[in-house]
Image (tube, rainbow over all chains, first blue to last red; front, side, top):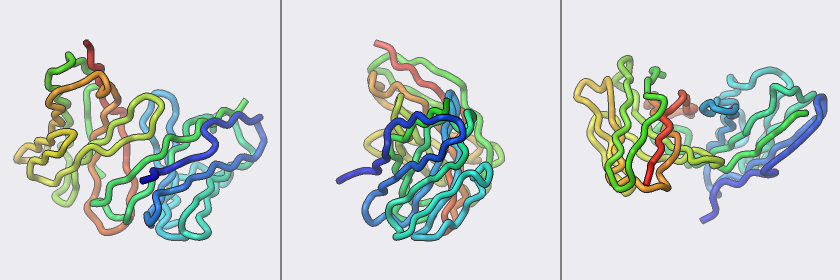
Amino acid sequence: GAGVSQTPSNKVTEKGKYVELRCDPISGHTALYWYRQSLGQGPEFLIYFQGTGAADDSGLPNDRFFAVRPEGSVSTLKIQRTERGDSAVYLCASSLGGGSSYEQYFGPGTRLTVT
Amino acid sequence: DAKTTQPTSMDCAEGRAANLPCNHSTISGNEYVYWYRQIHSQGPQYIIHGLKNNETNEMASLIITEDRKSSTLILPHATLRDTAVYYCIVRVAENAGNMLTFGGGTRLMVKP
């Protein structure tokens, strides 16, 4: 079946601009996660959704970052007033449930470059 | 979640077994050991997980020491396609969402 998909695959934007990154999880997966991966490092957690609600947003670095999942499926990560330090690969993952026994399936990521 | 320690990099000859170690000396009794890998330009991929018993699936085997302070991921017959960064992660076994906390991982290079 279809895996997690993310669009766009690459996004180049100028400093100060607003960007939206989209994640389509695996159908039926109630849990959705966003991670950010800088070059040469492991992914870092940003936010976790269970259904439509953000159950844990402790990883969002500041209030320029926001994410929604209005219908409990597709999620959008929104970054306002982008900065060069926001350049990274943004990864989305989904799982059947939110517990530790559930495997997380990752998408290919969106590479964001802020110039 | 407990911290993990892995070697930065390892080499393995194609067709041989790759044994990737992980130390998690502060692991708690309710924490699972998970392994993910990330092939270049792709998202991480789940490999295997376990609590205290050894586990095997079609991809790999996971050997957890009796005191649970370390584990080894074994790829029995490594191929060039197994070249990737391998992450060892421990997670609390709660029935609530929690994130994966990735460290630096081990960069495995499988050589012909």
